[in-house]
Length: 215
Picture (tube, rainbow, N blue to C red):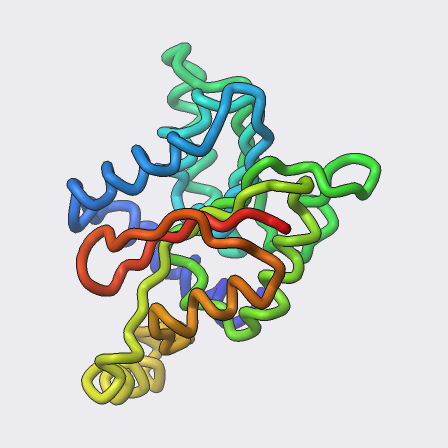
């Protein structure tokens, strides 16, 4: 288990107990995402955490594989899914997996690009090799498939956040954080072979929602 996976596994129960900080922004993110998904779509979510978003969206698509490299997060997601199955409310196409984007388990059968959409919410700024990740996402998507993400962009306030995060990292209270700007985020997405077709900030001003099509 890598260092980030250990951090998030250790934090998983506490993370699961916390309510969503901005419910209105979260609902806006889901609503805009659903505008781009269809009932026959195959969806992959990266960094799904404890599965809250996966359980909200899975009923609107054909299949939904939700992944996280932190086993503790997926353990909680599986517990929640088991409860839904007992209640008869679980979506048959939803599955959870301890994995990252590069694991062979996330590649569709036959090794060919097979996802209509790859989702990543509050995840990309925690990745230390963003170019590699986006290349992998591009390879996983069908032609014309969508990368839908929401990313915390802190670079314009790095003078405030970077020293604090560095101190918290030293004492094991914070993970790796990539200080992105909205501009650098979108430039990275475009140069990775995507056309950006929608953007928004949910919430303002630093949580950047991006819908990008594979070209």
